[in-house]
Image 1 (tube, rainbow, N blue to C red):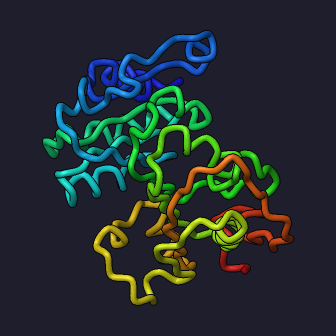
Image 2 (spheres, rainbow, N blue to C red):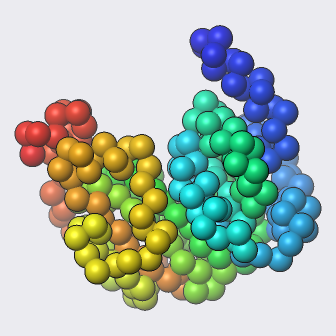
Length: 249
């Protein structure tokens, strides 16, 4: 590991708004003290909590926190060096309504209690074209999310992947989740909500290379019966030989 990464990790250990708990410790039964008590113990208010899962450098968490000071935002990612960037930037911007958790997304239900979260943002997740259970909009994850997302809570997906968008639309349809808004070409649509204008570093790359951005917002309804869509979806060809080669699509 490079000295630069080590320095970032060391600095992040002193950030009061970054929480790092190893997956091993959680599996061994370690109880996260703020589960169900984020507003009471950390944010010190009763504002809605919004998660960004797979947040990377936290660009959406930071952008949303600035747009909505009356909401609390938590970015989640396993990559410590990326989280450092967002955590550091939030300090420089003086943001008090944003925090970060370093953990595997599969473990997220150990960090938030029943009905504690109002919304989830999934910003450009890996479409996991060969592993449906790893897909962040699969029924596997819907079952996970409903353990801590409020009834009628919102799920946002923003993606450059035709595969991910098509799959998610089918999953939503199969499970009768109400769709609030949807577009297969966001920046050519009539959707005007300012939150959709936040562009991550990777999103800027896809846009300059000619890829359209897809977006869907739907409502999570609690259920005991999940239907995984059985449909063949064409894979994103550019992902098969490297994203940098998208001129071949």
